[in-house]
Length: 287
Image (tube, rainbow, N blue to C red; front, side, top):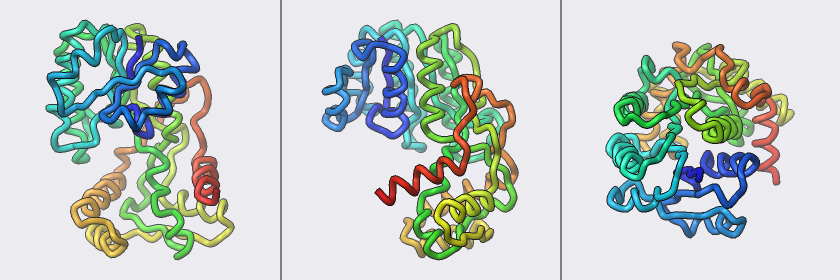
């Protein structure tokens, strides 16, 4: 049996879709904090089990009979080390044979604030003795399209990344890679630096928005502080604005760039180009 945590999240749903292209639906288990949100998965024949990172005593029962587990990292950066520890402990208790974990690109050297909890989880997996794969995912290209409608309307895309290169990839590409590794199991153990084939800058994102929308859009580079202020003025809560600005400024040094093409090798095709990601995103908004 194959299980995917965070099954109602965007990456989880896409991974399940990719997984059932490889395995019978009856062998795929969706693990969700709120099973009611996975009703459509249950209706399609996928087993849905309650799985709350904050309910550690119930995790082992939820993993009963699971051979291979995809642990999608918690979005609670402050608490996820303890949450992941509980999942790995439960997996060890019931004898899960393989775990794939979604980490962050270059986790061992990445200076972003999200990296320490990923490094801690990677260490816990190594210490667990369970065969495992570390999927060090780069940034989702879709991250740079949040607020794309405003950028198009104003003709300006804001950020603090300068000319830093970002090897982003579509969320669906990362999901397909996760499904491929989960299907392969222990034979796919190892560390994967996963990123898009072609790196881009935020100027490239602005150009793609302009090309697809047919309206002029340029990139305006701000200091980290000024970008955080602009985000706040746009309605983003102060703490989150500071975090987003920090990520943007951090990428200026190229920490989100990678030329290994491990992702395209895993999925057996080139990763989705930035302009195609933009085209699909704008089409979904228009619809």
